[in-house]
Image (cartoon, rainbow, N blue to C red; front, side):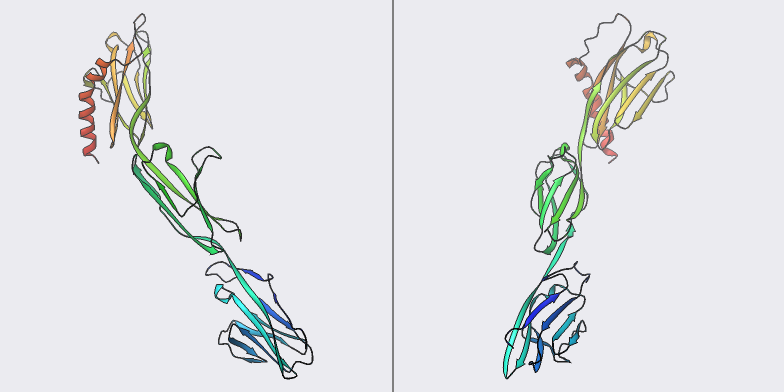
Length: 318
């Protein structure tokens, strides 16, 4: 015998399997001729089969064919520990000959450990972890999903570190593990960034006596702000006759159903959450009134005591 042909039947020389879940078997076949007197299969230096005699204690290893022209075995439910060299050894005319193949087991990427969703205050430092396994070793990439397409790349590392986090860095972060063996394994983590209220919209309103008037105050905050309304230094209760205070999400409205002369004047909207408070002055005015439309310094100073008192009261609740 001058040449022994030895090869693997399955997925070629490379087998794929998912960690901890066997998905394939492979057959190793040795083509021989009638001059061969003895045959054996070895894995490294361990004899698996000698002729029809099984030497391996592994129940997954079985003989398939032993004829004058072919000698083949099968290993069922392959895993990564089966990777390595397999040798077909034959004896003919008192001359031993061998042929070898090498089995490579590739493992699709799998994320084994990832950080949980997290809530932090603005300015904090955040570290996210994403550990993945696979063969070849997968590349781990972090991407911020809550930004415009094409601008969400963050880092190519198992760890994502964000120092002095800002409110616009909140949202979902996607960890992707890829090694080109199979589709990437993808998991998501949500970061919620708390920040104090910021009044983004507050507008003066002019309305005639007897008409309906609405003052509106819009505040951005996480957690969502609680609103209170004041006229001069008097807090307005939600159930006052002729008025209605309505809070929906980040907007609070003060409605006057039938405006009278006594309703005209300056009002203060105060937005508060556990991280702080802010306020804005609004004016309900009648026809012909001169309003500058800008919160004056004097109005802001007049509201300072309201802000301090409300914040202290609100903070006790947390």
